[in-house]
Length: 389
Image (cartoon, rainbow, N blue to C red; front, side, top):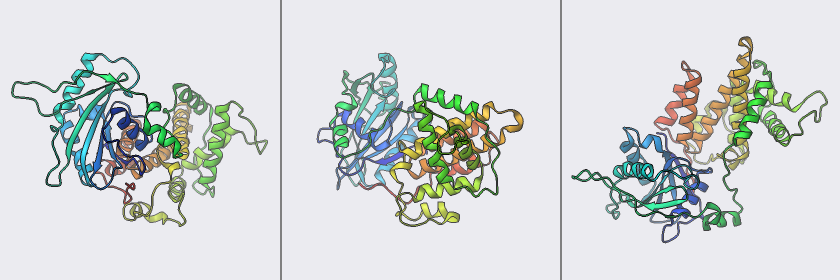
C-alpha cells in the first residue's frame, strides 16, 4: 500500500470553514515535506479537531487500480475513527508553474470520478466533505461522484487564488509553537555536489570484524557533510583524516549488515530511556506502541536527511568505482536504502518506503532484500505506535 498516514498533531486544528491553503499547509506539516503530484486526504474525527492525513502519488491513482487505492485511503482513515474527509488533488506542489487548463480539468475529472459523492456521515461511516484541485497557485472545488449515465465526468469550478504556505495561519502557528517547517528536498546543486563527492571517494569493502560504533561514525559524517557543503572541507581534529575520509569510513561501516542494523537500533533508541532488543527489533516495533520515532529520524529530520545524502554519495561512488572495487559502495548503498525503508515504514510513510524498494529493484533486479522489505510496505504491516491526535 503506497500510502502515507500521519497525524498533524495536537494544536493544529482545521479551521471551521476548511480553506484549501490551510489544508495544504496542514498536510505539509503532517507529512514533514512538500507534497508533489499527489492526492491528499485530510480526515477529522468526532472527538478531536486534530486532522489525520494520508497521501498517495497521483500516478498511482490514475492507474487502472486507482479506485481501489482511493478506497484504501478512506478505509485507513475510517479505521482510526475519522468521520469526515477532505481531499486535495495537488498538481506539482500546487503553487508553482502554469499547468495547462485542459490538463488540470482532465486529471481532476478522472480523480473526481473515483471519489464518492459528498454525503453526511451516518452509521459510523466516513463521509467525503469537499474536494479541491490545487495547481499553479490556484484552487478549484471539484464535484465528485461516478460518471453519469450520459458519460459526464466531474469538472472543477472556477479557480480561485491559493495563498502561499508562508501566508497561512497554520504555518504561523507552527512557527510560534517552535516546529521546524518542511523545506524543499535537496536542490539540484546539492545533488550534483553529493554526486561529485561520491565519484571522488574510494569506499573500502566492509570489515565484518569491525568494532566501529556506527552512531558515532554517522555523527562525524554529518559534521563532515556540513563542512563540505560550506566549502571549508579539509583536515580537522586529526591532521591525517579529511572529511572525505570520514564519509568513506561511515559508508564502509554501513556496508556491513551487522553495523547498519546496529545503527537502526541506535536511531530507534533516540529520545528513549531504554535499550531495544537488537534481535527482535522489528517484532518490538510492531507490538509495542511505546517505541515512537524521534523527530530527527522522521522525514525532514537531521538524521533522516544525513542518511539520504549519504545514500546519494554511495550511489555515485558505486557508479564511479572500477569493477573490482564496487562491493563497498554497493553494499553501503544497499544498507542505507534498507535503513531509509525501515525508518519511512516506522513513520507510516509507506509510499516513500515503497519508492525506495522500487529503486532497490531497479539497481538490483535479483535482490533478495527487496521482496522482504516490500512485504512491509505493500501489505502493509503497521508499526504499533500511532501519532497522538
